[in-house]
Length: 184
Image 1 (cartoon, rainbow, N blue to C red):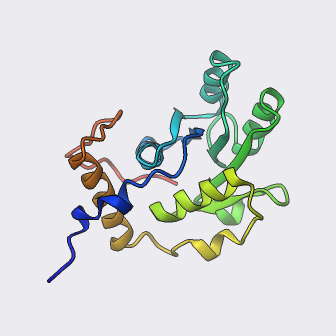
Image 2: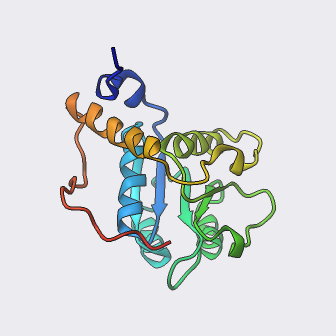
């Protein structure tokens, strides 16, 4: 008898945190997917399309905690490194996780957490938790699949379906029509 991934809700919907994560990603489909996967695990997620929007969002929420900045490195107007520096001036204890699909061209300050794209949902959630918990930095490549496999896609789809079946809502609509491929 085959295992049905849609019935694995105890794992798929497990809550891993309650912190606030600011996701800054200029590709809308990638940003929405990251945000939803974190929301499904109990995080409060703020989402911005670029560094300038992220700064405006943070400035409009002064006094409210933001625990983690999860940012793409290569974005128009302001890259992830500059954004992290500017946000840390406002929130000195802000933790940062950089993501990028252009790992050869990315320069990251020594010791900064990095997760190369593409990554699986479990890799994302595990890395976010590691950074928030302040665990010692491990080689991010050890946790990343070289390509986004069909298994990773099914994992994400099963998580969304299982959580939907339990009545856990979404802030962003699920699209039945696929978008154009993401540009990294």
